Length: 509
Image (cartoon, rainbow, N blue to C red; front, side, top):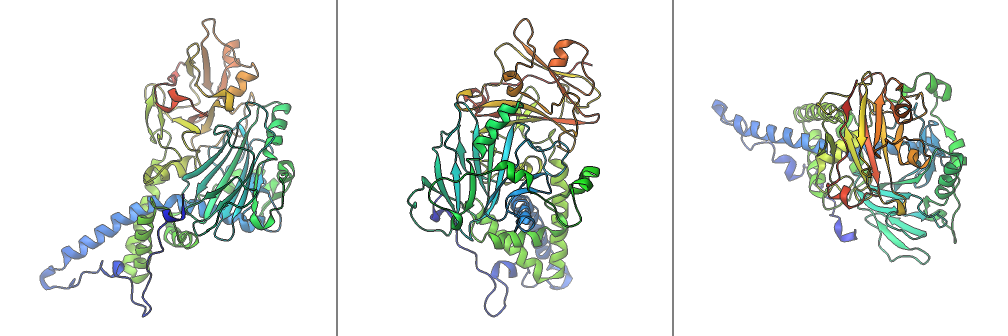
């Protein structure tokens, strides 16, 4: 994006303190006409404001969600990159923090993490200064890596990585008010339509010591740091040192979290505080891209209206509470997305949301910061072939016919992975066979058993199968309701155009 893709800040209150015209117009000129003649105009205003408020909540949910996650800046300040709360990548502002292994299955903070890559994460304030993004130089042939960059609304603005054959080097990530040319020594300037942005690094890791060492070696060449901290030449990062640097807020430690992981189950967006949180988020991002600018203006009008009168405040607060409850209750794997064949669903525009504010909000609830769909397609489901909710006490099978495994581009590191989640979209804390997902990594390790006809049948259940093939192909399920997410990284054309269909999930016992 270029600097011309953002719109100017809207007008605020006049110098004499009078509210802006868009706010004042919601009060009818003669609402007190006798015989109730002014009531229809008042009701029209109220109904319009209420409807608009519900849409603004959906539009603004991902923004509030992202800005709320920058609270780790304060936690990590003075500690350097590390693991916030000992669980996930944390960083001071404009730096990247890392883990050095899969995210722990026991954690109850980050929903739907993958169990295929090792992560790095940078939450940036590009309004403060640009950020240097470094891509890896020494990457084994066929190894998957990516640095996904999103704006404050979770829309993917840049997707660097093996799939796009991004060259090694430094990129300058800048905000909407930065002006200049590509500095010497940088490959390119990456423009963000918002001040707040997120860069997520991923490096594929098999489950062997050698595979994880390879993933770390690539991840250690990938990173982000403030421009003021840059120096000539390449930087060497250290994901293992970052993982050892576990930082906890006062009153919390590893032992307390181990005893009660649910302490961190705190929703990132709350209807009760939405309007105040949205105002802070917009203040941090006074400029937004063209797909969000019209709604940002509407949001600011409602924020001013809420301050103008207690009656409007009550109406807007109620609208936010209602929209909040409905979004969280409706954003379920058995509901989100459209039919992708054989009972699976997908969001066809994942990561490339444009003005699909509703789809973007749904994604922010169930799997925030999904990659651009050209990079990875996410297939989800919460029901079996008969439309019944998936339950761990039953046995289900997925049968891939010969040569019908998900078609990903292995030459650029592509892989597929079926991950098991509980009803709240976390991994089960423990697994009897140490599996939380199944896919390419198991194929590469020669762990799966194919039928005599070349088919592959996966078994999904709480109870371990008794037969040898079932044991080899078993993905353990929790006792209760569960959900499935099948990731296809570097999808090929049959996945992109929808002609490839995943097999059904059939209850067999």
